[in-house]
Length: 443
Image (tube, rainbow, N blue to C red; front, side, top):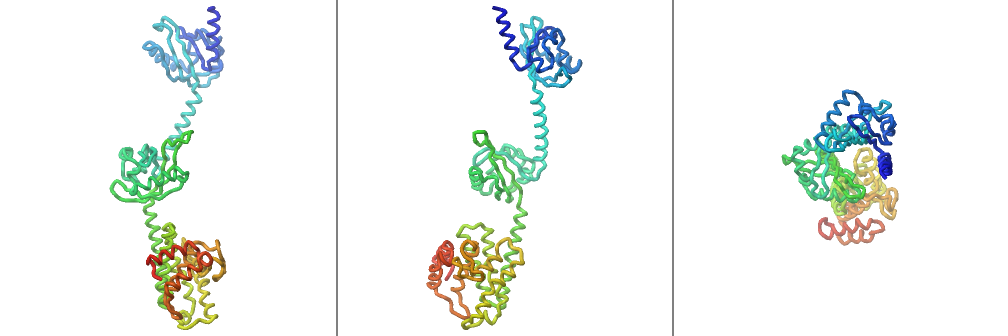
């Protein structure tokens, strides 16, 4: 019966993938079957040898043995990482688990399990080096990088030095704060998280933040949700860059575009006061329509500038025709219609971040193709052109011209209502009708 028990015990020990060795007075009294796979030594080769054979040097063995036996004198078990050596000379790192059998070391043997953790240690070392490079990058980059908990407030979990520089708060300050504490408009944080939840959160978004000294800055913000295998959000990682100076430069450039367009429009008054005033009123109406249609501020600015310059081609039209009090001949109308192409030639040579040249060329086109100069229709006409076309008609009909009196409000409304969905974009017409009825623009 005892032989059966011993056999079962040996079978179990041999099935364990770690090397199991029993020591008696520092000599190997037993070696499990996995010893050869782990150390390269056959079990029978180790029996009777000192444990020194498993370690790299005599000095290292004595040092390790000192720790090892000292610890086992004080306690029943001992676990530690130790470097060892394979039979072929390779270095191996083991997690060694030792247990003494008996009340004291002298009364029994020590059973030691050697778990090979070399690959894990190499992986940890590689990861550590990688993390070191990553940490160096994070700490030296000029972009603010942070990690926060989930939720609209979002408590800061980690920040890099650039976050301190950008916000004016110390790392200790930030780690006691919520992300929303920095927002000038806290609701912006909720918008960001909503976009992340719908999968759109990787795109940069401009946000307004307040620094520790109260200064407001504009930042470009990108955040992503880090999720577990089930899709549950663990935390958010974010990057911010201070773009305040860039925004100021962009605003100054845009202001310069507007100043230039307004200057050109005013200059045209020296030869044709009707055209100059017309362009300014069309520009204001187009801007109002764009705002009510929900276009972004940049696109609305483009509409305004396009309105200011849409008739610039009339500088090439003879003044005698522009100020002629009587009915125009067909030849004279042909010269007037040529202003669309002439305006395109003038504006197309100047860089604008908006389709100003296209607005100058096509503002007399109609959805049904009945306009000029190209007779294009439908989807070939961009929204800015569709808006400008209606605004141009409304303002022109509402204003006095040397060759005709101003049309009545009823005539203006009849024209755009009659052309709604055929000559003119129906959505634009509906908004212009609302504007006229509300008194925001007089027709």
